[in-house]
Length: 88
Image 1: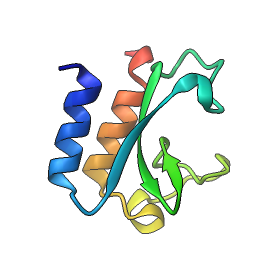
Image 2: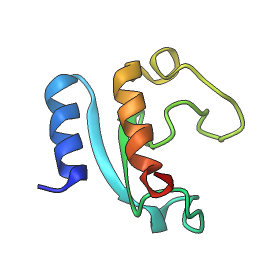
Image 3: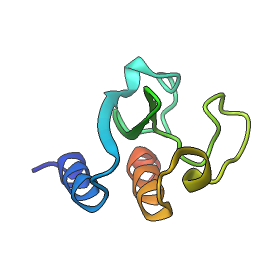
Image 4: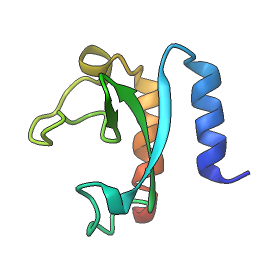
């Protein structure tokens, strides 16, 4: 089981009221950004896969992931840590 699969399994078991999925970095605005992993994890919120839970969907503002998207902080932290894995 890959690190991504393990994270998805954990998130789905811990937060069954949320939907989690993946997207290839090549299909996002981060395509040329080496700070991100090639496979990004996100939470599906109002038909948008949120891969940056601490940013607004436009990427210009900092937000509280729980208040804005309904993503609990531990889940948001795990997503953020996974997606920034290329910098670790």
